[in-house]
Image (cartoon, rainbow, N blue to C red; front, side, top):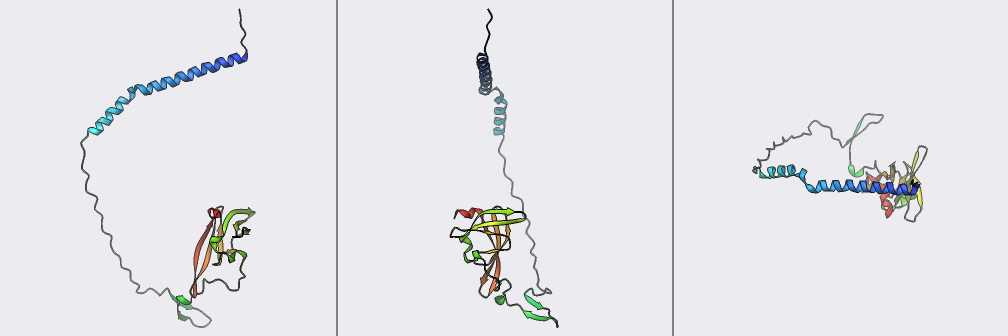
Length: 195
């Protein structure tokens, strides 16, 4: 008698043979781990290290003292003395930091839309690029999204945008302190959009 096996029967037989082979391999691997014959040399080494006598910790290294250096201002020009050079002879004028207005905002520049808001009330919600130009997408407190590029302003301290990347807008603010102003770096990040 000759039997002809169909494809489904052969597939079932192959699956059973493969399953038996995998189970056999796993059982051999587990039995090898359980017997622990290979761990005897490891246990001996650990016992040998534990049996060594303890040692003493030596004194810490000596730290050499640092030499002190004294700087003298003798012979160095005063960095706060302003020398104005005009058409005539040079005029020496004492610098008054209280009257320094170099970093104050330009009163003749017309303010931009987002300069009416504090910087912490604005949120960066994305970035958009086309050709060589990148715009930061800034949301105002009312929910309107504005498109700004490098060189434009935002915030109440005349913050001028200096760089834009995918996660942050960097700007330089002109902060007034009394009669004078100073420059201050500021950053608006994409993470601030959760506000």
